[in-house]
Length: 479
Ligand SMILES: Cc1cc2nc3c(=O)[nH]c(=O)nc-3n(C[C@H](O)[C@H](O)[C@H](O)COP(=O)(O)OP(=O)(O)OC[C@H]3O[C@@H](n4cnc5c(N)ncnc54)[C@H](O)[C@@H]3O)c2cc1C
Image (cartoon, rainbow, N blue to C red; front, side):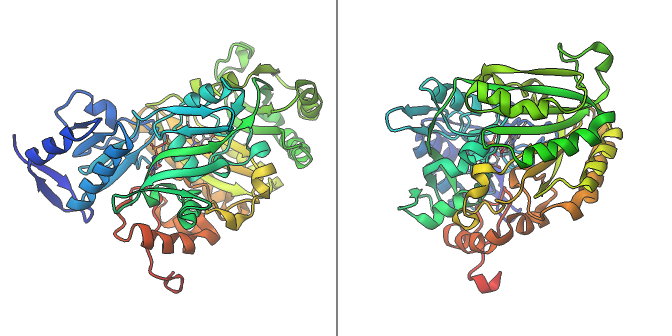
C-alpha cells in the first residue's frame, strides 16, 4: 500500500507509512478509516449538506484513551486536525480536508446518577440521547431545540433552548469536563481543578482540546410541559411581534417563546390554503405546573387572530423533537446570526420585509428567546460573553439545489447587514458560518483576550484551529 499523504497544520503534505497507521490502529478500542474503507463516507458526512470534505484519515474513537492516541499522533506529525461530536456545526469544522478527523460520534454513553443529580455524558451523544437518559430518572439538563444536535459542540459554545430561562445555558450546568489537551494529556477541569481551563471551556468552543466527558448538574423536571405553536398570517406580524415583545418583557423564567417566520410547512393542523404561505409562528413552552402555564401563556395566545393554536400538555422529550422534521440533515444550509438586547420596531420591520422576500420554502428566521436565569450569570464567570441579550436571531437559509446557493446566501447576508446596527455586537459562536473568521474576536467581546492568553497556555501551536478560532497570544498586552 502506498504511503498516506496527509495535510499538515501549515497546509503542506506529510507522508506517513501505512505500517505506522496500522500500528496505531492496533492500539485503539475504536478504528481508523481511510478513503478506501466502507464507512468512510458516512463518517465524513455531517448535518450541513454544503460541507463535502475528505479527511486523509478518520480515527473513530471508542474511548478516551483513543482520543489521547489520536491527539498525540496528530501533534507528533503536525497534522491538520478536526474534531467531530454530533456533526451539527453549521461551519462544518468537524471535517477537514486531507488531515486527521477525530470522530467522537461512537462515544455515546450517558450515565445518570439520580441520587447525586449528575450525568456523565460522552461527547458523541445527541440531545435526544441525553434527554432520554435524564428524563428516565425525572431529571433534566437544559440543551437546545433540535434533538439530533450533538451535546459536545452545543455545550462548548453555549447551549440554549426551551428551559434555558429557567435553568441557564447548558454550559452553566457543567460541573466538570474531561479533556485531552494539545500536549496529549487527559485532564480534568472544574471550579477547583484547572479553573482557568474550565472557564475557557464554557464558551470557548473546540479551541482547548478534545472533550471526552462532560459532567452535568441535573434538575428535577417533567415529564410534561405546556408547549406548542400559535400560527399567525405574516400580514399580522407587525402587531403580533410588538405584543409578543411586550408580553416577554414580563414573562416568568418558566416561559420561553421563540418566533419563527417562514413559509408554512404542510403541518396537519394548518388549513391547506395556508400551506406554502408566509406565516409567523410563536413556539412556546412553559416548564412548570401545567395550570400555571395556561395562565402564563394566555397573553401570548390572545394576540391577534391566529390561524391555529396547538398549545397543550406534552411530554418534554416529545416537544424537544417537535422541530426535528424541519431540520433533517443533508440540506444545504447557511446561517447568519445576531444577538439583540431588545427587539426594536425597526428590527421588526426589517425582519418582516425579509420574510416577504424568502428565497425558498425552507428558509426561515428564528428569534430565540433567552434571558432569565442565563441572563443573571456574571458575564465574567465563563467565557460565554453575552448575558444581556433577550433574543438571538438566526437567519436560516436552507435549500436543496446548488443552483440556489447564490440567492439563498445573499438573502441571509443582506438581512444580517440590515439588522447589524440594531444588534448587540456579540454573536453566538455556534450559529456562525465558516466565512466569519474575522468576526470571532467581536463575537467573544470582553472574553476574547483571556481566551487568547489561555489558548497560548494550552494550545500554543494552535493544533485545534478548526473551530471559531482564538489565536494564541503571549500576554494580554499583545491582544
Ligand atoms: C438543526 C440545528 C439546530 C440547532 N439548535 C440549537 C439550539 O436550539 N440551541 C443551541 O444552543 N444551538 C443549536 N444549534 C447549534 C449547535 O449548538 C452547534 O451546531 C453545535 O456546534 C453542534 O454541536 P455538534 O457536536 O453536533 O457539532 P460538531 O459539528 O460535531 O462540532 C462543532 C464543533 O465543536 C467542536 N467540538 C465538537 N465536539 C467536541 C469535543 N468533544 N471536544 C472539543 N471540541 C468539540 C469542534 O470545534 C467542532 O468543529 C443547532 C444546530 C443545528 C444544525
